[in-house]
Every structure is written in C-alpha cells, then in structure tokens.
Image (cartoon, rainbow, N blue to C red; front, side, top):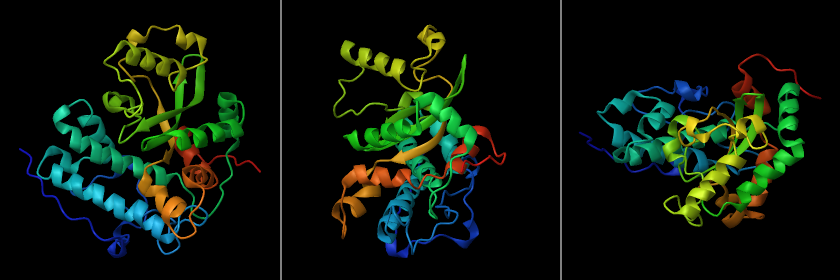
Length: 304
C-alpha cells in the first residue's frame, strides 16, 4: 500500500547542491533510498549558464523544479519497491501500469530534466567529435539541417515536452540518428513506449479514431523508426510493440515553460521567446557527452 508523504518544495533561494554529490552521476546509477537533486558537474548556481540561463532562470529550471518533482516522487514511492530504484528503472517499471501514472510522470520528468542539463556545457562551446559529426551528416545531410530540425521542432511545439536526438542501429543503417519528440512527461525509451506521448494531445485527433491511428502510422514511418530506410520500412510493423524499436537517446532539449519563460519571456531583458532559447541551447551542447552516450566512453577525436 502506498502511503504518500508529500513535502512542500523548498524556495529557490534555499536550494543549493550538496557537497556529497559534487559530481554528476550517470543517469543509470542514481540509486538511493530517497531520490535527491544531484549537483551538476562544472555548473555554478551563482553564474547560471552564461549565454543560456541567468542565475535566477537556472535556479528555477534546475534546483527548484527538480527538488519539487523529486519530493513528490519520494512521497509517492515511500516504503515501496520503487523507493530504491533509479529514475530510469522506475520509468520502465511503471510505464504500462495505469495505477502508477503519477509515479511514472514524476520519475520521467526528473529523468528527462536531468538528461537535458547533463547535455549542456556551461563553460562554452564544445567541438563535435569527427565520427559523431560524420554520422550526423549522413543522417541529416548537414549539421545545420539537424540544428534547424531540433530548434524549429522545439519552437513549434504547442504543449510542453522534449525534443530528442536518438541513435538507432537498424539492419542496413548502423549509427543512424533521428529527431524524436515527446510531450509532457513522455519517455523516449522503447521499454516505456506505452507512455511515449509522441503527439500533442491539445491538437492531435488521438489514437482512438481511424484518423488518429493513421496519424500514428505516419509518425512511425517518418520518425525515429527508420524513415528513408527501405529495408526497415519494408519490415512488418507487427514485429514490434508500439514504439518498441531499438533506439538510444543521446541529447535532449527541454521545452517546458519553467526552463525558458523567465529569461526569454518575462524576466528583465527577456526577448526572443522559445525560439531564441533553443538557438542559444544549441551553442551550449556538450558534444563530448553526446559522443560518450552514443559510442561509449572511449576518448573521441575532436574536430577543429
């Protein structure tokens, strides 16, 4: 039986990283009896993320929001088997169970928000490794095309969610990359496909109608599941559960309002809105970390 112990979120001014978690742990290793906010490596709360988020914006987007989400998750998972699981495993374990919807939402939001910040370089631009660059160009035609697709997709999203760069290793197309969107707390992981939330429910007709089913099929044919790959497209979709193809998320752009509204819409000197935020984010991507997720931890050769 669940016995929620919900706590009031801390005020942003009182939130700071703990010395005990001075290094950012890999997402799959965040195992603790009570989930807590890890310190982000090389981030300084007093400086924010120069060129992307002010100190106030960064405090709200990371410390305040992540604290709130994890406190709610702790309350829902107290004295249950989920209490000691890492965030990704909670997401995978609860994705298919309606009674665990709240646990899934808080765990997935905390995981996705962490994934977003983990892919940012607060110190400045990071050169793209040559092998990653070559694979991205083969997948998208050019790096500028990838940038435009991610930025424009993010700015066009009517509801909050995430834009993902995912790596697929399909027959005949190894090391291929696609752009995938998830709305609200939707997860990109194949094991959580029942709660992917790959469409905006404010505008999509839904999957309970013939139109919705057709829209879903079109999405599968033109998204991370191998658009343009004839050998893959010819394979029967019945071989997969919905969303059940192999893919690996390597980069994430968070479009939730708590991340960009303060600095790009309402705050002092705010301008440009979500589009400007997404453009500035692109210049802060830590391509070395993207490479490590995509190809392992081997030191990459960096482009000039």
